Amino acid sequence: MRRGAGLVALAAAALVLAAGCGVARVQQAPEDDLSTWSAIPLPPDAGLTAQVVSGQSACKDPNGGPIRVLLQDRRTALTAAFLVSGKDLFGSCFVTAQGGSSGGSGPLPDPMTAALSIDDSGFGNVAAGTARELGGRVAAGVTRVVVELKDGRMVTASVVGGYWLAWWPNDVAASAVTAFDAAGAEIVIVEPPK
Image 1 (spheres, rainbow, N blue to C red):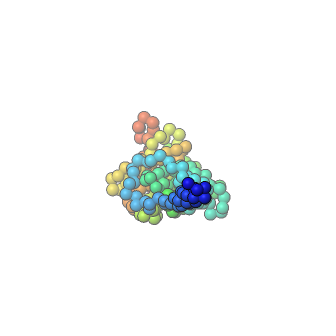
Image 2 (tube, rainbow, N blue to C red; image 1 turned 180 degrees about the horizontal axis):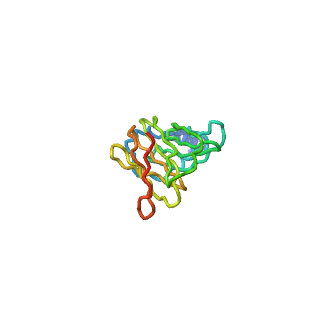
Image 3 (tube, rainbow, N blue to C red; image 1 turned 90 degrees about the vertical axis):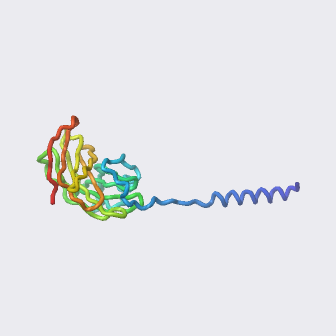
């Protein structure tokens, strides 16, 4: 084999290899249709939290201040609701793996007068559907919160660090929110706002 022919063959092989490696496909997550929604929360997703913490979602302080993620309530592989607070705000937002988000916030809540408070309530477009959410604070000793919907479904809320949050697809309203202790005893039942 001539020396020049070997170099040409080696160069051609390198070009084929480079062409095969040079094409990168970025796959974006499919849009969530909420059909896989779960009444029991899924483990938190660090990627969705990162969208909130980095300011790449609707979870923002309208005055530009920092916000703190209080908890994440994930119900599908692609969509979660977040309870957040800032210097002068308390609220929630929805975040999807596709980067979509929606949210709202209000002033800091009043001091608690019961073992469970409903401090946040909302309804809006989420992913390819609509959803409602309820959230707030719980006293020490509350380990489980269950939201009963007017259509009879029971939704187990996420409970972390003195806060709770639950969301569900469609516009069915909640009829009651019940707090339980570690032994499963009922502590309090609260009627949600109309």
